[in-house]
Image (cartoon, rainbow, N blue to C red):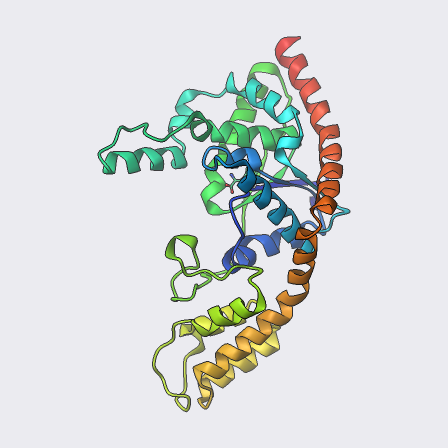
Length: 332
Ligand code: TRP
């Protein structure tokens, strides 16, 4: 089996518009990979349920993620793009896997432990606000991965443990019932380096320093102009490596443009206002076309429904076969 025969699978939770840091660190590499690998990509709406209890919001964010991935150039011919909840076999496999997943494994999950720690620190009951969806989150994620026979699961570092659990659970299953599942492998995105936000710290929702990926042009410009800099005068030479402006620029420009930009920093003579305008123009040149396509799709959600339905139909073909194997193995 050549590397490109391997099945890649990943899920994205519909919890709001991704920011530029998500784009550079995760979405862009995923889209590149989808060009050379058979890929399952789904919007993990069931995984959003343990925190989002508003159907309208989940539905809207599901469309946003689908539109965004297509607008960014996801290869729709090589990729099965679908909504997790549209394939009924996911609920079935989830139920089956509950019975071979050790409770102790769930107790060790980082996200569950973090939720308990927060309660303890706040002096609340350890289980306060923790529902079974959160506690069994890794089982559902395992079902996602095993249902579609994934070999490779690209995820952020925070999800690595969940994929390792999926591998463990597949192993328990195979040991108990005979070889039924492939063992998936987590692939953690290569380090794109720190992607700084407006204040120079890592771009993150929790720091409130993000730039939305498809922010309207005016808002993008406003945000870029708000990037915090030091107080060096235009004529002073500047170190590009210490500048948020430069770090963002290099993810949107070619290598030679990046070199030139670095040189302008070092030489002196370029003020931060000019540098920000150049960054904005570069970003906007890259994002304008996908942003327009994103807006078009969001105004035509019926088109997205068709794409997601087609994806679900294709995903279901694989899921049905897996469930036949599982039922036979467990129930005879
Ligand atoms: N839990 C993942 C996240 O929060 C999303 C997800 C759900 C996922 N199912 C998956 C990722 C299966 C990879 C494989 O980011």
